[in-house]
Image (tube, rainbow, N blue to C red):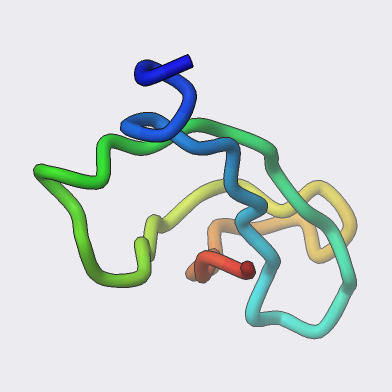
Length: 54
């Protein structure tokens, strides 16, 4: 149970406005703020920023 609280499941939503999401886990101790990653958006056909959605 404690591991689930430390590494919650988060959604990363594309900033390109396509509505595409990735689902991943993050460590709250290392990344307490909202996560931002540059990943591939297959709908847009290019790499864009993905922001954490809660």
